[in-house]
Image 1 (tube, rainbow, N blue to C red):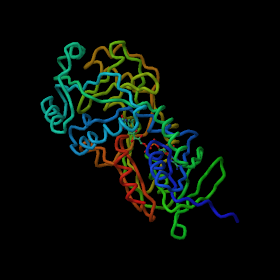
Image 2: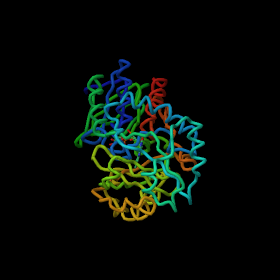
Image 3: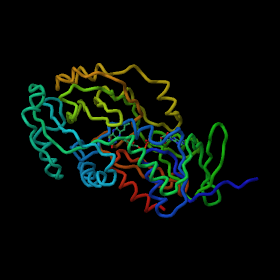
Image 4: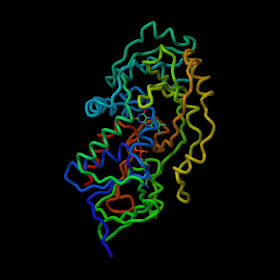
Length: 370
Ligand SMILES: Cc1cc2nc3c(=O)[nH]c(=O)nc-3n(C[C@H](O)[C@H](O)[C@H](O)COP(=O)(O)OP(=O)(O)OC[C@H]3O[C@@H](n4cnc5c(N)ncnc54)[C@H](O)[C@@H]3O)c2cc1C
């Protein structure tokens, strides 16, 4: 019998976080295998998202999340410079009613965390419905181009000699004589590899692998999210707008498609669920089979009350993805990383970054775990 291939590290999941973890560990001289179920890297949550590089403004109810973003924003901009898109003006608007923060609270919070903001110019405030919007602020926030990010990570994986297996699903992990064996499925055939440590970076599917391996699950909350991809009217072409903080909306440039995403706190989620200890869903299949009709009309009709010009948007498509957060995030909308060591097996670590600027926090934890 041929002995299974042996690696120091196996990383499961080729999204932004899996790729980043694989590159960082290979840079330390480790022999790393990265396996990804899809036929390309960064096709799931790392592509299907709002493309926002957070700089603190989005989290006026979580000082820790806001502060971490303030610290990580300049590092992200520096290290992924070619993927950063900043050729647009960004505005945060505060609604008069139903907002969880007032304009004064928003301003004080941003001053406290050192996030630059100033009153938006009259040419911009005049675009908003004054009866519904209390104040509009000019802020500094950027977007990222997910296709350029994919290219960059592909190159870094080559440069660091990470072995990448596409179309390869990890179906199970198990203890193996002090190491971990990983069963991989490729084109219907199973193969086993062995590693000193394994990183489960499968985001919405972290529990699927744990359950298939008979290991305890992590408490996670999922929602099926839709972001409409729209062509915005000319005056909004180089503009991003977020109305904070409550049941409102964002319209953000989505550079990978040359369009904007329109997302709405009430209409983007099409349903939510928690993983239970008894049932496991195949999230990929769930997404394909249960895609409901678009909520675009509802998103638009509410958003255009605040910013009437949005009525001229044309929907081109929608991005659909399962969004996964820690249950604690429901309280204050925070986005801490999940880094859970030894998940039922020694040296099996589960990683969820929650937002892309958290990558530096994740890599610090990874370095400490090996
Ligand atoms: C709707 C939405 C909007 C968001 N907006 C933003 C935003 O504006 N800014 C921001 O910073 N963050 C945002 N996020 C969060 C951000 O997208 C995620 O934190 C990040 O992309 C997660 O990266 P990941 O590598 O963990 O997951 P993914 O990119 O989903 O990668 C996981 C990979 O694992 C693979 N996989 C799963 N199971 C297996 C298996 N058994 N074997 C092999 N491969 C497997 C999948 O195919 C996938 O490629 C948003 C997320 C969503 C869903």
